[in-house]
Image (cartoon, rainbow, N blue to C red):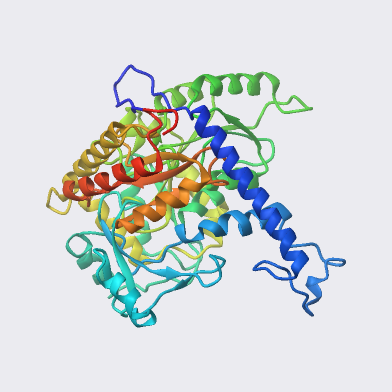
Length: 526
């Protein structure tokens, strides 16, 4: 599936799962579920098993008086499906998350139920020691723990600040420790606001052409606490059906009514807006107090950017407010890194609320909200992230300020411009090569996120393990994070990657695609 570049009149078409892939995916899950139930039955019959519940003296274990903490299906799915491939997730690293990382080796002594670090090479017998040491990716961390040197294709290090931090940011960040603490130990509305917090807010607001901004200490909580402050009972939230969980949680916590529109489908959005205005609230038919349309700049599981120009046009036509989440697009899209609005040619004055995070392109943490001065002053007092949560670390604030200076060229170099150009070139090159392999690749060109469809649950673990064996650190995603048929691997490209590193990765991926039969764009059977 070829993504259409900006300016193309050809509609972007997503790859469609083949009938064979769909049938074998359903069959794979059916086999896993049936075998899991059979193993549970035999465990109860013989009184032995990894997951057999044992009687204890804890009162809470008496289910006659206490409800179980987990639903039966969730418990079964974790035991019999997730644990089988648990080694593919939560892999610890022992280095900075740059273009190359050291992934610590883990082992399981109970059939993947639990994982533990392998530790020193001395924990292995001589034959196993030789296998590890003779491997091409063997390294040891500073504590002499066994690790694997991998090309990092999973982190959100879009502009590569994790690679050149010693050059670009170290001086300013370490210097900030002379005047500011690591933590303010207070919320923003009490004693948690320093001059660095206000400077970050001024830089972000200026960068995006908005009146003011507020910064919070966690990207997820920026959405989860801002949305409930903006809308409540009597309001309507219209959300893209593929919006991030933080948006979903924030909308649900707000008490507002929620409608979803088909992903990036502005015609469906317009129909929902028309109906909302004509019909009003359920039962009473009174008009909604306000309507908030929420979209993302780049959708993190699809690698697609938002049809922002049409979303804004439709919303303005019907008097709805626009909330844009730029967690993945700020710093990574547009000629100067100003995100989806710049890329799509939309004036930021037409976007009422602009949210983003500092964890991707800026090498920091936390999130921001940009809007009018009145809205930001309201959020400072009403948003739970501002009133109750610990404020962003001043040291991180300095990291953000310095990275913005690099991006905008205010450091006196052209490093920022080179980073933006390298990210775009690397992303488009990697996507082009994946498409040439005949893989089902989601998303658009110019997006640094490239999901490759795996479909079958058995291919989730197989792909991840084959990549790790070849020195590639990748992210794989399955149900329930994505629909049951839509399992995928997600590549995140960085400006820190060299063309030689990408070529090596593509050679390995091409070999894995042939091994696992992933060329669904060429054949129904992969």
